[in-house]
Image 1 (spheres, rainbow, N blue to C red):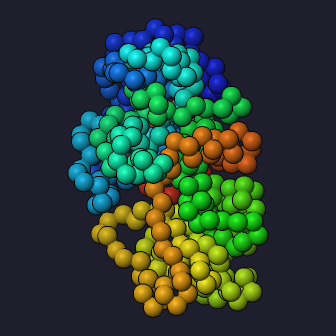
Image 2 (cartoon, protein in one colour; image 1 turned 30 degrees about the vertical axis):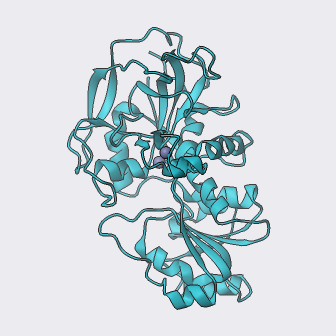
Image 3 (cartoon, protein in one colour; image 1 turned 90 degrees about the vertical axis):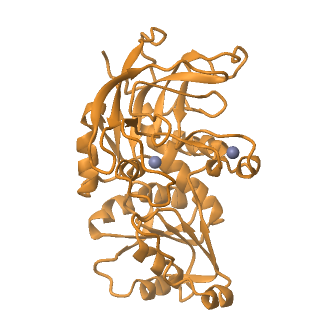
Length: 370
Ligand SMILES: [Zn+2]
Ligand SMILES: [Zn+2]
């Protein structure tokens, strides 16, 4: 079989096998993956069957595999297929989609939530990524580390023709997440935005979007080894937290003594959160994005007095909704958001997770599913 690195559909798209290959978490709680054959599902009412060709590998997949997030309601089931940044082609329509805008052969994406209820308060508020009955792809619903997955036609994301499938995959999670966070931070042109974790998978996209998409002045904080990727993505002031004695004082100096307008914490570090409120200006906003692993800890410096006297806001942001996904892919199609990624084979995903655990990955890895 061939590898589909471009936007071309596989030649055998509608020739659907009864079984297909999948990478599963055979021993959740440990770094372990098994390649297996699973039954190819039939798409239900309103659903499409997607022949996946690419999936981004996200740190959240690692956290789900390792049962690292105590905020999730239950451990990951053994034998689950991981993955939530899938791109592929609609291979089959379920009943009721004769007049749907989504048809066989269309290139679509499957996100962190593969389906939502459309009737809870977050869904009704257009914030469907916080759906109270949503199905998390690759946790309690089979994910995108496999050849075929089903999803509602109304919830898959159309992929713009200009965008390569491998480049599109991480945008469905990382890109959408930073875009939604930027909106929550109410970022405006000329403002100072601090990105904590500026050189990581989410961080480099946040830097690019803040600088080129929103016209902000970006202060990036990360380990010195991430300086190049941060600066390549529009960071105007880079702060190496391992070498800078007083990060708060440094940011105050850069911002003329006033502090930053907003801070996006994309790193999953409790220490970063504790620092984030200390360099905000009056009326500033901290957006919490990276989810720390292990025991739940409060944001260290969030004293009511500080919040009150400086009128600070501390808000959370979880991925993004379907409209934000479409708008994010538009930024990507126009070249504002560029994923820094390399590809690997689905069969090599255990090694990808190992490299992630060892901190060896810059940007993102996208697996090709042939
Ligand atoms: Zn993700
Ligand atoms: Zn809902």
